[in-house]
Length: 110
Image: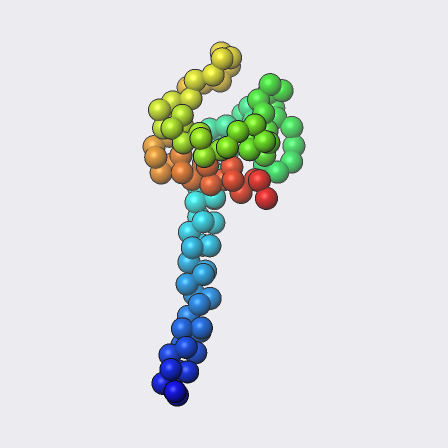
């Protein structure tokens, strides 16, 4: 019985460490996505939780999830986003960049 309690106590002691790693990985993804947004998109879009877009017809990123599921952007981000207006440049992210970018967009939903 003592051995079982010792194992349980050890497992409980490790629990915060196990939970911290996924959170830290998520935070790194979000930060990488934020950097991509700042570099590639901030000229036209409001990329943060507040503010207006420099280009009025460019939607703020914080509202994209209200229009459609941001996970649905993954394919478009890696194949090249093309839009109906000529002012948005076509660009492509590699799959890791797209994943980070989507993580950042999701972080704006909270």
